[in-house]
Length: 66
Image 1 (cartoon, one colour):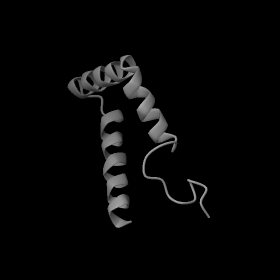
Image 2: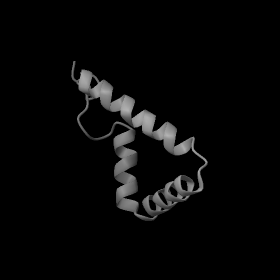
Image 3: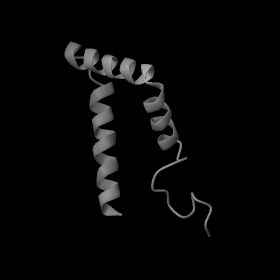
Image 4: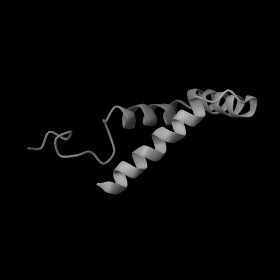
């Protein structure tokens, strides 16, 4: 559980840096990555499904197992 928390802290910190940074190189790389992901429909769909909790290693409650 602690590893999950540390992973989440790292990811959210990365997002904060990536989307809160106005340096031209960071902005350009961020926009390129978003454009490439948007163009790659299967990858985009997988990311959306994972973010929505529809796939991946889900806790029992999310899998509706009581």
